[in-house]
Image (tube, rainbow, N blue to C red):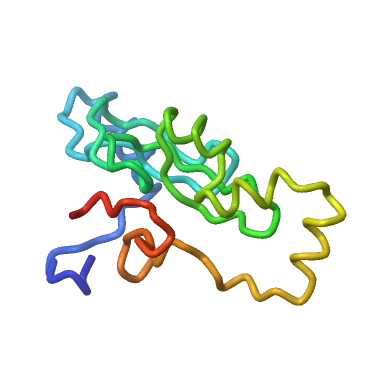
Length: 138
């Protein structure tokens, strides 16, 4: 956050989830909005009902993280239920097509491939429109 120009940034002892629990316990307002990402199988813990993120594929309000179902990708991204069905849990049509191939063909294609051909650029936070997926920020 500091690299985005915020000067007053501190760590919260116990993390966001503990902060929200203690605030509610003491009858104080919880100022964290949305879902807190967590680094385990839950992938997120809802703190408030507001949804402040968007599906990386269509731009619909959504805050559900998932990993691409293509074993050669496993990109962590936000996907709404509509796109999850449309892309069968994959991050792109290319990954969807590849994940539908027989397992041996998938392994053959992955052999020697670097895991860098992602369609989601985390540094810019947008999808690669050259693959025909709309950029929800435009």
